[in-house]
Image (tube, rainbow, N blue to C red; front, top):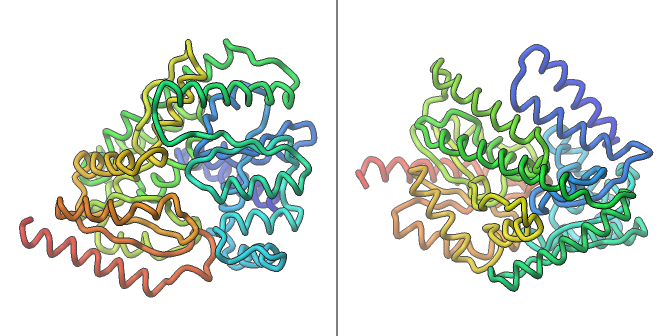
Length: 407
């Protein structure tokens, strides 16, 4: 079922790309092509976390990266009721509704036989504890090894060495899976590709400070998560450059949507269909940045790739004390001159939710309206349509009254 869905998605994107060669179609084609490779009989498939793991290391091996969260959560936008049916397969086996819908959807897909094989299941300790547990559960079902990259909550010489050593051990496991030794020259080229993409993305992030915002805010949020899957490949830089060109063209041609309010988006953007974009557009409100879309890491040192990749992990906004995340949020508030901030809070996501009170208090000191928007990422049963509309309408009114007051 999933394979057929990706095939249809890729075919439609390729057909449309011939007519209108757009960046988001490039992205869709590359994403679905990668997912489809995982179903090939001779593929060496490493299940991982696209948005957290240093993908440059995987790019240096002849393996196919597969992320069960991303793979499943392309479905809710196309078939929300079908996704509920898949989740109920997991729920019927005792997996609680309290679990993140991403993971119930993944478990249900496994029980229905929708997934490709797994040669190794690899994830990281940060961002999502539920992902780590689901990774372990699925590894047991497959009879394969589950590995976790443990990233401690402190940045120090010792923690860099600790994470670096783990990455070297993971490289050894990838050598076993792929059947060849790590080519250091190839890894260094992957690091260089990642650094070039970082520079291209930095130029893009600067352009996005322009008023009005010249792109699509919900796509920005999604790109900040899924775009990392291409780290270490030439495609990532090509994608960012194409988006940059399209934004510049929109600005020259005056095809940028009108903008009255600018919003910073915190945590995740739901995968399922929602009324969020519709309401924001009605009020000329742009999502201009996501907290995870900023360039928070330095260039990776190609001469010391394992230490460099470790350092990038340790500088992630969701690693370490809350002050690290809060500092990034406040930096974006200033740089993008936002009028308000929205935190999408799904119940299962403790990593994101634990600090929103501190963020709210910090933003209040700057007179920045803050909205905690509750809802589920993929399960339509847990998304309050009318309540979301009411909260967003009130939030826009609050931003409007702030402007009228001249504060």
